[in-house]
Image 1: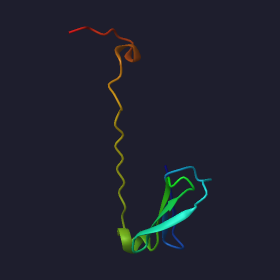
Image 2 (image 1 turned 180 degrees about the vertical axis):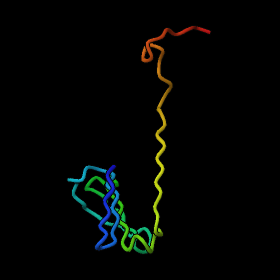
Image 3 (image 1 turned 90 degrees about the vertical axis):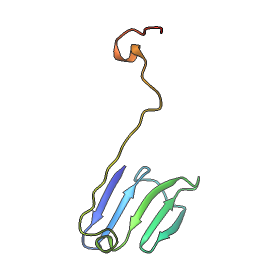
Image 4 (image 1 turned 180 degrees about the horizontal axis):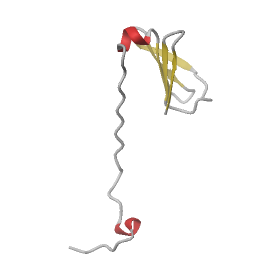
Length: 83
């Protein structure tokens, strides 16, 4: 993910795909907030116009990544124990 803010235009953009991805369709999701999709309908970015007005003066982002499964003992250099 890449986040860009243009202070002169008060525009905030969240790149969810590669920044070189081409937008095929843009959908308005709320006043001043737009979602960009590629040709496969994959969400590649979110654009917020008038970001200070829409989001306030301070934006706090929190990201939590979860694992798909518990790591095996071998991945941690240990041994597994049957129960």
